[in-house]
Length: 194
Image (cartoon, rainbow, N blue to C red; front, side, top):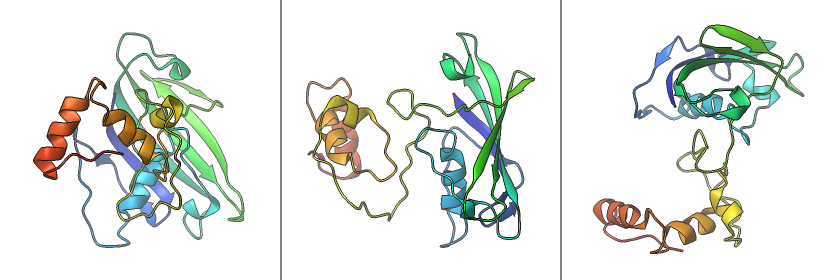
């Protein structure tokens, strides 16, 4: 599954981003306060743990719209996608008339047929997660020392479970350990472990 394109309207600093076409790997570059984190935040709403608040709706507006177009979607039970790849478009409306609270509305269009009224957030548990919601230069308020499997598998927005993730992937018996160690050596010159 991959995001082909997305668009935000009246979301945070964006009156209308226009349709943003994405490649398999994308790098967002820009000045501070240009909206890079806002775009990632909009994508993160589709995953459990994704947060949204009244200030996400642009100042002077009562609602915002996030459109996310995905292709190659298979075996996502909450979306009723089977083994045959389908295209899915999500329209997420955030309404906040007073900026104190926010309500969310979902419209899902799968292979051209729409449905609405449900909540369609993806799991935030590996390997079925959608996005790793970590922004550079964001400090973690606290670290958890819990290294059990459920802590290691969860995608946390604040990386408080970093010790669990490093403990798991740093274990030489972990199936992907060799690739992890090689990537660390190639990029950093040393292997990061817990």
